[in-house]
Amino acid sequence: MSIPTHISDVLGCSADLSEDDFRNYVDSLNGDRTPWFLAGEAAKEALVKAIFQGDARLVAHAVPYELEDAPDARYYIATESGSYAYSLIYFGSSCSSSDDFPTAALVELAGAWPGLPDVLTSAPDPGPAGNALPEVATPAGVGEIPVALRGRALILRRGVAENSPSHLNIHPVLLALAGLRVVVDPIRDPQWTECNSVELDASGLVHRPEMMSGNLLQEALCETRPRWRFVALYRVFESAYLLAVRDAFMDTFFSNPKAATDKTKKALEAEVNQFEEVVKLHQLQSYFEAVTAEVDALPANEFLQAVRRDIAPPNRPPVAWETGVAIIYKLRCSIVHAGQKSVIFDRYPDGNVALIALTPLLEKAVLALLGLRVD
Image 1 (cartoon, rainbow, N blue to C red):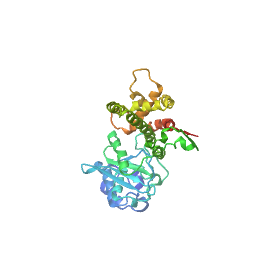
Image 2: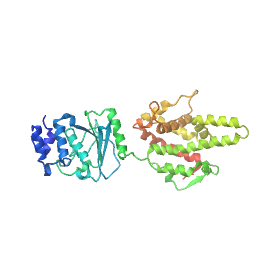
Image 3: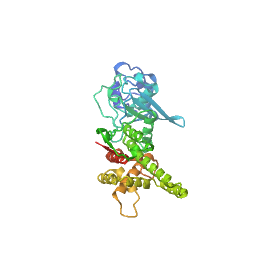
């Protein structure tokens, strides 16, 4: 077994050394020729075994997500049936030397070095296969962690280099468990924050304390991720149609309690129908016609087109505003529900793009529903 060129070049040794000779050579290393992660005897031995004993080698995968800044190093390990399965090594933004990591993390980095040539000189980048590490101008063989690695993460495991879906599925799980947040482009503040005055409709829902309008609008304002801003806005409509169901029940209960109860039960079982009733009651059809038009203007958005296909065709020619209501309802379901057969938001990489496009339309509809006209 020859020593990989990228290792022999950094360490300054022949690529043809035997296992024992290489072990002795590595043990004698000190100073500028010692990579930062070969700080102890255990790490050096892990490197020897990874080169000369194939089953000791670890595969390192560069996490393809941009992470929120976290200054401290993190090391997280996952086991299956009590045996090592994965580990996560995060290079905190303030990490500078091997002292920032536990020995186990250094041992694993040493074991992965044969298959990760640029760990000394590069920042992890997903590349086309999820493993490419582009070269940067950072000297190799230094005792400090390269600046380009800081704020990035590696997932390590034993096995072949290919990244199967079953392995890749675990990577975001480990990031979450280790407390590392993936950066999601925030949605802009609601449009109403750009205005300086509001006209209150004297009979608007904003005056109904049961609506809790202030709490709902505050929640929407505070949510910066597109999916949760969308859900927060949808809750305003949800509150409105629940209030409408309650009002209808109270109006007829004493005159015909059984009929009122039966009607309420049916209304609660058909949420989208009740949504439509609220839209008609408050004359908001034009806002949902705009939703349908916007979806039609985004034919390349896979998420929106999947939602559109998931809407059951009506028994008559479709009405644009009713389609818009159904789209908003299905979007909400795709976010809050899980499963395999329905349209699920998390499966579509262009889901955020869709919500960013439609949320301003929902914001306008919410203001009109509450009886608010901002200027």
